[in-house]
Amino acid sequence: MAEELLGKFLVRERKIGEKKEREMYKIVETEAYEGLLDRASHASRGQTVRNAPMYGLPGTIYVYFTYGMHFMFNIVCGKKGHPAAVLIRGVESCSGPGRLTKKLGIDKRLNGKMLGKTSGLWVQWVEDRIEVRDKSYEIRKVKILRTPRIGIRYAGPIWSKKLYRFVLQSL
Image 1 (spheres, rainbow, N blue to C red):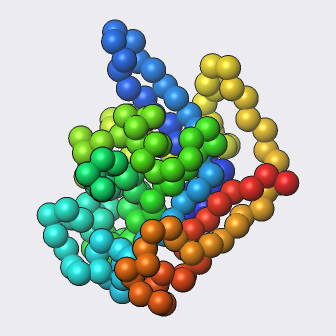
Image 2 (image 1 turned 180 degrees about the horizontal axis):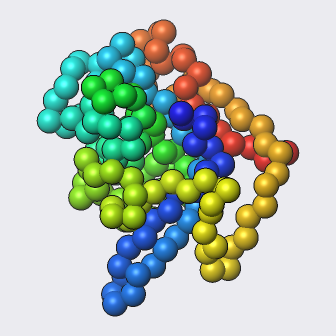
């Protein structure tokens, strides 16, 4: 799923003042976290209060706070009870998962909610995308770069080297 999300659009709709604002950004970087055996996953030590959303339905939002300063946004993608998730690391105008959540106002209030218009956060496919003021998108050929995930050396020599980070590159 981490690779399939590349090129899709992350849509954020929220009320700013008296007006609803809608922003849309192409997803360009993701990381996969695969269940209980993945030593880099929050689920590797079993279910806790913190990682409980990872055990939910596909499309559940999993947001956690890290380094005492950043929220991280993940989309649950495993079957209910199988804690697999995709960390959204970057969109085309913002790299880094902490910057992304700050830019889009993603925090713990979304944790455990479902992607969709009710939560104000969803993924839009190109075929049924919405138009956003001052932006137009064209379909181009792309290359997907696969690398090890970032910042998980603690997961040991096997899991820290898995090619579970995906980066969209235009040709």
